Length: 582
Image (spheres, one colour):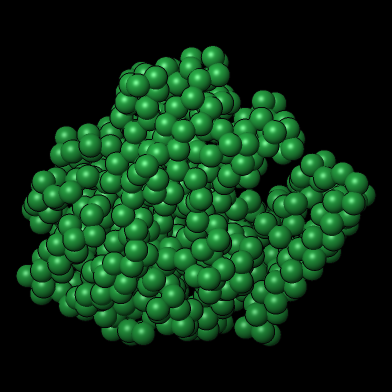
């Protein structure tokens, strides 16, 4: 696939424009709405200076901007940070502290199951409500949405998350994806939430052991804000209406160099090179810079998904997210986010550019993956990261960006976090992936990778279900789709299907199989920001032991309906493939 000629474009990479944007952003905080707009206008101006067509959309997004927080204990006030979407409570909530230790493996969890956070320390919901009603829950980790939802369910008056190190990390604590609608708004957190560092946390744990009270204060700025969304479009020659979407956020916490000025710069350089080589593009490329990633829980990309849903549904062939490339010490690709159907393309590009074989991970319900419910195949979220051995040597805990640097979401994410050599490598990876997608007549998607994943998932779920639910129909549907895909691949390889026919099948499959594998909400809606398990409609069979009495019957009813959804989608996908090869 990647012949020498296709890789020639890598020789054209330069860092002048990219590095200048990084150094400029290193002096520009980009989290207040007015500062974000200034940065968006700057991106647009730089695109225009390069001659690249750019449109600046100006939607109103719902944002929750943290201003200040504190914890007061025995008259002493401790510094804290509220995550985005915490309840604004400037007058403070005073209540008894209750400490519940979290499992170390759960510190970054998006899983709403209490047992995933607290293990055996979590009793029944009734027991935990009796223990926490009206109290402030103190626990280890980050003030994330799943943990906040658990605290609310247990009746806590507030939540204090103890970050693992000396710094306090910003974040978000809502499960709402993007600007809320009438169905979503009820999930907005109703309690104040704040993060403190490890030293303060130790004081709070000791105070909780003595039954002490504390005052938790948060102050937020919330509402609808007009925000700039620059979108560049480089038109292809053969199928200009079809396009690849490359995107990443430009708002950040403070100056956010590694998260995500380096990503903004990567996309700028990709835009420059794609524009200069536009005559070779088969299909178009759109490159979008999002606001509202941090303070709106992906509000920018969600607005775009909503506003251009039909165009995305009919014409977008793939979405590629660009977050935290080019960071210091981030020389490993052992946590490469990708959907299974994209593995061969991504593997070959990373091996070509970086000389490494990536280790893949399933996309979290995170990042700006705002397009799963439409059904877009996708790869990348975070980019390169530091090797585990180096992270352990430095004594770093795991974070969700900045290439593994613990400056992530802190004031320390400054210019020193960026690395020119790593940046050039990562630009090459993004560029070659997009270049291949935009220039290959046949879209390089390997759908039998997903049927292999489905087969393994169904087998695992069937073992868990035992005699309670027969998942044989799902296994048969997976096998039928795989057989149809084998014939489809042979027809493509033998030249019996033209690119336009084959690509219609490829994108049609994505519209069916991506929602099936990653979503529970309907198409064109948005799932909550909670981890989605593979084939989520039938995943409940792995948790049947959590349900007793009449609730077990409810769970089995849900599982049966989920099996029906799964089988019907797989059979629809099979019919789509078979129709093309008949």
